[in-house]
Length: 544
Image (tube, rainbow, N blue to C red):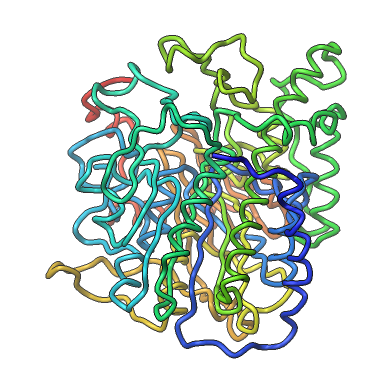
């Protein structure tokens, strides 16, 4: 499979003109095409229109022609966020309160969708949409829980959470249960791609475009494009890494400060919001040796290259839609499943395929590493903490919505929204209603709200609490207040309007607010059987 080069991408320069054409409403059908693009383990400030130095011109153009939500939230980790996105329910309500491979008998944590859910693909297919998935699934690993069993007409999918970007070799083995091998499927057929030549981000886009090439234009389509980028292992193409090889020699403090400044200039965070403090356990950049600086800068260069390549693949998709005459009637949404991740220090051997080596240069097919806490802290600028945490660094996501003539242009909206809002938004956009029953089984009512009023400028969101829980990391957001805690730690209280970086714990100063939100969380947890993580761990039939 041929990689596309910079020369091949010259045509993407036309996208600037493409987007500039949409200054007035265009004639459209009543049922638009819908594309949802999900990044994996990407932090709040990792794309240009959210303050980054990483080159993302295609996402930036979507943002300038559409709406950015500055306070959009996910569910802190891969599986729970995907479950909420696809169903409009909190993860425990859908059966995916933990991870898909823990195989417990607790219904809320079983690791696949229960019978009281319906996916957006199910719903849109019933309304006449063709439904396609290219990329990561990670909400059910057995065949009966694969995408085609949940409303998708066609799919090319990595069923599990991560793999090599170059040949889909598994990055884990004996630490997971026996038989839990890596599975890549085209529709319902497992594929052996281990000896093929490809780069995963390119391949997912190729497969998406192939599906759209054979699409019946008389029907609208729903495409769920779920990239694994930039989830570790850090794998990128040499020419992409070269673009950033010197960018990060300035160090993590300087890059983080620069992003913080741009976020304020753009208007994504208020002028009063502070930059959270650097983790004192992590090294100061200027105390590293020259060799250490080069090694660390290279890690972030690989990570940036992965996001850069994803953006250029998004450009490929947009150009394809333009050539097919479908772009002007396509609504596009972009978000991430959680914040930047500190995971990925495994180096092969008993933890992965024997090909992986601790001595391999990060970015190469033989490497198996992440980029570490200090760079993850940069990804989540200006926030603290990381993936799996319910502090802002774990749950705040960049969010872009673009639909010319229907959504506002070049707007930043501060209303707090949640990944459970995606399902009702897409249903509203398609002009359909969420049913009460599916396959003769009563469905749980939607938890989310449609964002169409916010995106069009016609209405705001209702006042409501937003709930978060993953492995006993918990939180509630209501209005300007946020209640949050790490596992087995006391509750903390923050005023997000004044202190979104969560630097000033107000739990002692405002006991009434603390008590009110604590009660709301406990009521929500009891209603949905949200359990202390120790109880879930005790039910796992194997130990990590």
